[in-house]
Image (cartoon, rainbow, N blue to C red; front, top):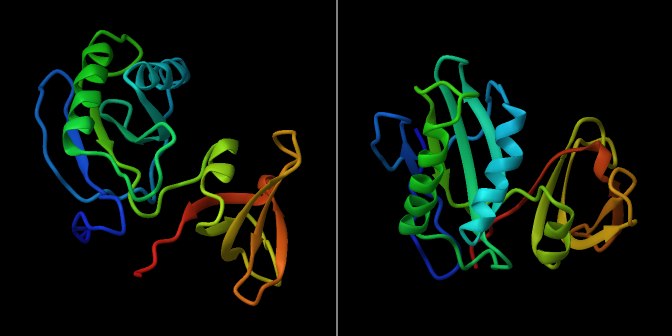
Length: 200
């Protein structure tokens, strides 16, 4: 059972607007982003990101769950250039959901029984694009690795200092550890990077 998060002064809300394909409907529910059974449809992924951008938002993350007969598209959106504290409203999630449903209903590559879930990035916003590591410089982040990242651990926490290197695949995330030491972790070794919320 997920915890509900109140909209407060210090952090953005984490909520969900969900529709169910041809049988339209909506609900608010906690977002569970772990343990997904991915069944991506490549031609939908690129086009979906462009459609989200055309609506004035950015696609933070797209995950696939469910089954081939009843796929679940879990979409996190944000405002372009917003800070972690600004957040996304329920109305904005609903607007994006309605626009994407109209397009998905006519898309032959996906079952008509699909479920679309549109949510805010939440307080643990994932960092998925190169620009995210510059945009959230100075924030506390957690890096989780496919293997050991630093000092025998596959998780590293600290203050985000930005990216090193110009090329995708050979760049590294530089963070300052709590003790003051700075380390650079190759992005190729990182399974997940996300902001860490702390109460002020």
